[in-house]
Image 1 (cartoon, rainbow, N blue to C red):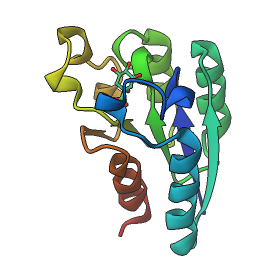
Image 2 (image 1 turned 60 degrees about the horizontal axis):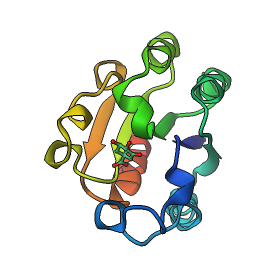
Image 3 (image 1 turned 180 degrees about the vertical axis):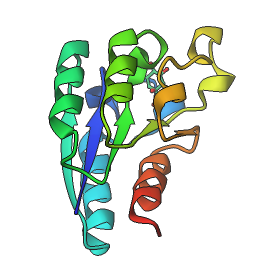
Length: 141
Ligand code: DQA
């Protein structure tokens, strides 16, 4: 059984980007930490990141039917992307939307997600633990 971790634009800059919101952890740290958790529960983790909207659509389409679930931080595309919304709606594999920061305590435009209505669930504001909690939900533990 497998889970996919998918990160959107600028998440590859974590650790040197707006630390007051995103903390000190790098994306590599998040990926390794999550892989350890997932492996300990008998699952395998695959990881992908892209700064490009269409590439994220490709990754989601390719993942369809291949995973128990997709843990997705769509980053800024959360607030804008009809293409990602249509894709998540079209695929059968459930997606949990994760945001490291509390998007509700920031600019008004971050409060609205185009994707949340078609996701299985959403985790917001719990730091990088949000990724772990999403994995736990998919692994039913
Ligand atoms: C983010 C929140 C988004 O609004 C922002 O564009 C990001 C990161 C988060 O994880 O808190 O890049 O998705």
